[in-house]
Length: 137
Image (tube, rainbow, N blue to C red; front, top):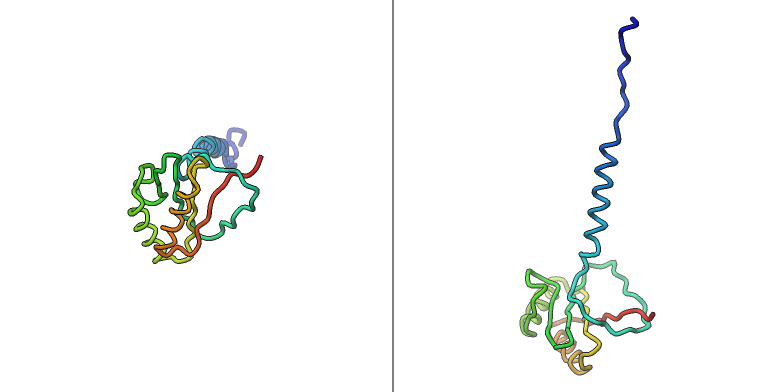
């Protein structure tokens, strides 16, 4: 009996820890890259954050040169004409009337241009259009 060994029934967790650490590194690298929308220099305001428990909002971005972008579909990073954005927003809002629509407008853009965009969005059936700002520092 001196030559027989006992079976070891322990689970080796070292490979699982290695996989977990690799996944952690991958998520830490990719998380900052997942921000949505176009880079816009937002104005600062002292406002409360929105309650985002509902569906993902539609975001219409307006750069300083007046170009418009929509976070919907496969052309999120390319500028779109206002009519195309109106049609896309109208389709989404008619299917889901409670969808929030937010405007990210550069702080250098004229106030009248932002109001014109908001009016155009309301004309296609958007109940409320929100403005996105940076918190005061």
